[in-house]
Image (cartoon, rainbow, N blue to C red; front, side):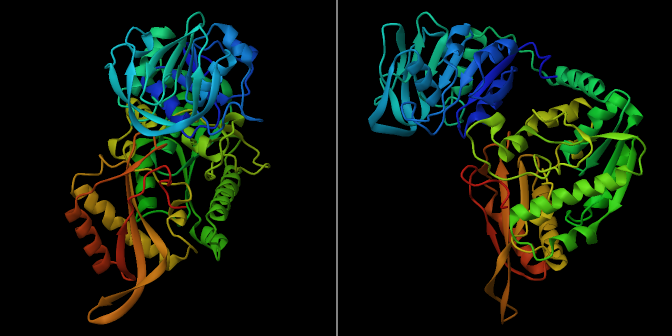
Length: 516
């Protein structure tokens, strides 16, 4: 499917925390993007034949020993290149410009004066706000370069080469703090790379179905269902491709929300005509998690048990050769360095890179290159019910990573009851669709309180609600105080064992959305 896209932009990853955002912004402009290692060769790029190349930012300095570099022959390919921050410095250095540390570093918003005669800044205001984050910059340009934007402290805030299709910006157009950043990226794609914009959800579905048929042929696929949009869209795509050659397995691991198992089973019976196997494995998972407090160990244990149960159940289904998973691009990026790039692992996901070597199935992952909002668009295209498509994301390890510390049945009951109240009140206030994800976390501590004129020493619930489209960055939601007050009052009064409720006002980054 990826190979069949007529248009593609490659993003060379130099360790930027924003590489994923660059990919997302390109896709928002209807051009497919893929993050690849900075070590990719010019010959490999030429074979892929992308419409454009973007060099990401990164934490290193281009002039130090062991700085991540790229094949200098990339410049000779004639493919338009946009360098961002570190990427600009590297591209300029390869073209013999000088990069040095600056006396005055730039971090945060600043005003940038742009040259509208440049295709890169077409339709932009002359003075525009941009987001800077650098301690190095280009300090000397050769005659072959032209400066096309500047700030108070950066005379070469954007440059272009006069004879080669290389453009560079010292600021970050991919972040929302650069209000006209999407237009800059759009200009690069359409005005400079000559893209037509063929990245559409409908064409993705067609390519994905064709790819699944090509991979699976007459084989049989088993798909793990969680009840969320990712696994539902995965199942729907595969069912569209191979029909009754698909079997679905839903595992009740005892880590689901209130009445979730029953709702999942009913939803799939009502909306899918597939072979569904529902497994009650609550005791099995809880026994495995007994005494475990480390979040990474929890994830690994849960992931391993899922796979073992899949294998056991799949043996009851004849001729299974493939395992389908709803792995998304952010899962891949957070779990392993992107295609060998110098990024760091943030946390492991139970369905990425943690599968046991003896799995025995070939993986089918039709959503592996998609972001969450793109998956929802596919769900709508496929006609899945709205309540399923727009259901808030729920992690594979379930409530196990929303209980900080050991997972026990009493603690699960406390968290389920609190979480049920949060979602009820969010829905009642008409906020559910505007919030990307909202949930409760049970903290590993007790606090003093007064209940019924008596001293209490009970648990604390934290509420987490975020706004985001791509789940790579997120801001905390400004839920009205009166709604938070109602939620807090209900939890303390209705959930036995809770005497304090707090609200998480952290952004991602530096925090992640989940607490573990």
